[in-house]
Length: 300
Figure (tube, one colour):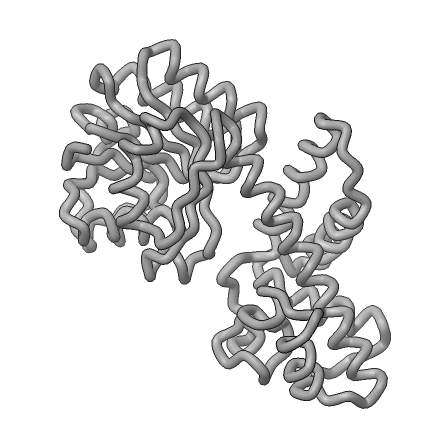
């Protein structure tokens, strides 16, 4: 893999990812429509481009990190004609399966290698270069992308052909959304039963209730000092983004004819949270909404 990388989408996730590529010795040509994001990237060593197409020009690989499938497709349509023959294009956004596959077709039509490589790990993982990448595409595209992904993440999995990375991300985040609600409900019940939160954590974290939503991202203050619950639910992963991913899971399940009743229930609860104006809080703050709806007005 060459040393020049185009990076389009320098926001909360893309910005730190681009900076980690700079730290790894790559020349990064970046573009974003938001002035503050552009400035932060430039301060970290990214060479700013005036347009997305300019960021892609002469690059050995282009990475996009964008908010939706339609936006991603629009950007790919703009940058692919500007890319060098034989270059690689990677999308690390979380988008619908249909948009993902259309993007691969755009690249294939131009003779470019392509990869869908969404991430897990949140802003903290993006900053620390510990993201998990779930990649879909040919083995050759994955091998070419690996040095780039390794500069931004810790766990890198080739999940299969085009679209497999997005499928893995959607399924993983459906598990995450459901499990966070389950853990939150358990703590709410423990509060009502007079069981201390620390006692529940001590038992469940070492027995069959153990899961990431409990041991790493515990939704109540106290047991896990680094969880957002101990920082006013400032988002590592905003509830609005969880809702986006859950909606993607439901669209995918409908298209595939899969039964996901718990996924549907989780989607409905995060929609309620978003309607209440809480979409900007961390998704683990679903605990507060559930506790409030059960009559608990103050956190213990």
